[in-house]
Length: 597
Image 1: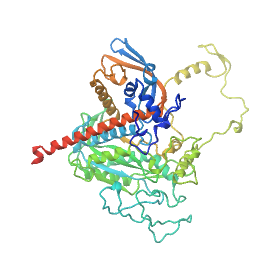
Image 2: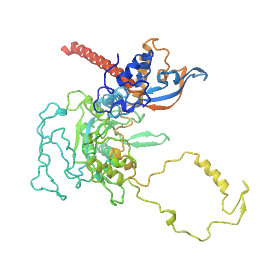
Image 3: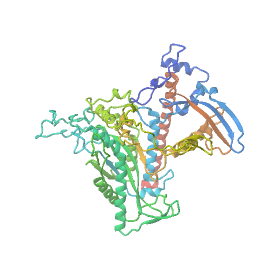
Image 4: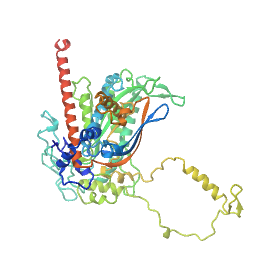
């Protein structure tokens, strides 16, 4: 019996997988359900389900074709050889790995869970992070962008609701002003409405012509640099505080063998960027205060005695107030644009006991949720824009988002144009630098150049074959065109310090290892299937694959229907198992003598 679940289970925000399926000439005039029924009635159906299990929940999996060789690691002898032509659909399916929930809900859910584990491990330890980090001072700051013009907002001074996500509290009037009626463009500069949480006008400017769209996209472009300078300023403030308290600097040995003195404290962070409804990014961060071990500078150790959460909060507030800079000159604004934080800065201490206002689980889940989002809150969704597609989204006289995209494209334009050859002045004088005709003793070439052109060309070819550093862009605003679809923001949505926590790669490798052992525990039921994931850490054999890109998406919507259904049922079984396990653990704790006491 064919499944009747949606093509993309458990989501209403993402497009279905049918848009990513290949268009092939149908043998029978089937619907999606009919195509799924035809696949389910084939003799190799269960083998196909097992074959696509790794990417079953993906909206647009990557198909790879090629050859897999099992090689003896010691001798290099080929033990087994298989080609994807002998596999179901003549391809290997792998998940796309996209982090955006609107593109692939399944891969975004995996990314979100990894992000949660990564962020939480930096607060309580585990997964290779020492458990002593739970005693480090840690705060949860939120940094916002400055105002670029008045927008419609919903402000609640005093909440009486139990759940902020479903807040129905009475808000204050949006922009209640008695002395200003109209702006310079003749539009109302006041708004007495009390907006509801889902009002579509939230984040929209009161006057599109008064709003500084250019400044906002430039601020988005340089927001990463602003965060970098803020962290440096906070570390310098903490270093001065340590010097005033008489705590000496720590001597460490560099890789070259030299001794270097560094401050005894440093900051480690995990940061998530989130778009506001007005299209400006703001940052949520987990900032932890660490010490420095002179014997092992890479170790994560507690800070010196005396440093508290209050010191960390003071350092961040001081940095926010002091840090600011101007961007490079631009033809539209020779003095550049000022880059600084807005007035709304919220810094809260993190409680690791579960009884505070902000707990480790709460803040890690909050940041992991926003790590899978992008510009959806502004209503804009698109891939990277170019000269052919920019006209569909940019409009200098359009709505708020269209003007932001147009500002990215306009400011990021080339600022210098080379003079055409037809307009360049021509010099008819004899060309300087020539000498009497001579013969090169190395290659025998006759030339009037001071150096032999043949030998020079040979040496230049050898230099061209060597890797060189990438030249710096002459226009610092050229990146705005590349990130016009992101309203100028070109940074990562989730970043962390090197010593804050583990890496995504470690979590992925752990998941692969678990799947391999899970597959082996099933006995010899699927021993005929050869997969590279099953032999990643084999000491005796290696899986060498010569795979090439074969396509994106499922072959038919019926295949997508069945694969996504199988993945949804597997997720439900796992969720049920986790709930039962949590229930058993909770009952065991409640019935323990310590709990009764």
